[in-house]
Length: 129
Image (tube, rainbow, N blue to C red; front, side, top):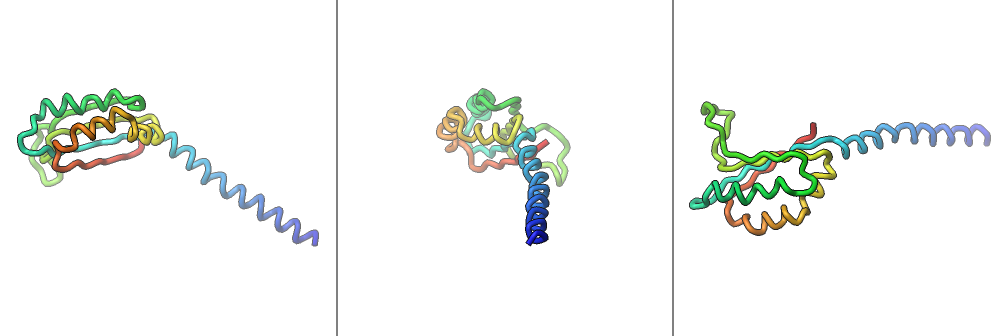
């Protein structure tokens, strides 16, 4: 009976120890800085300058740390370079939680509501740093 109790205690301690790294990784993931890149392919007739003005409001969302917006750079045409989009935004967040909050920020939602009819496609690339 004593050896069974000791065995169960050992299992409990081992299980708790094994879950610590997983919990630590989960906490670290929440705190990782994140970059959110959005590429827009605009419909024919949409003025790029006007769209950039509209999209610039995204940089004012509460949890956005840094914001950049622009058009394709006039770099060399190569197979690995995509110049087909018209406008791109890069947003920096201090955590994935901040990026999640951005997704429901009223400014972000209003931008989508007012402008989603102006693009034919949008592509997002998210990564942690």
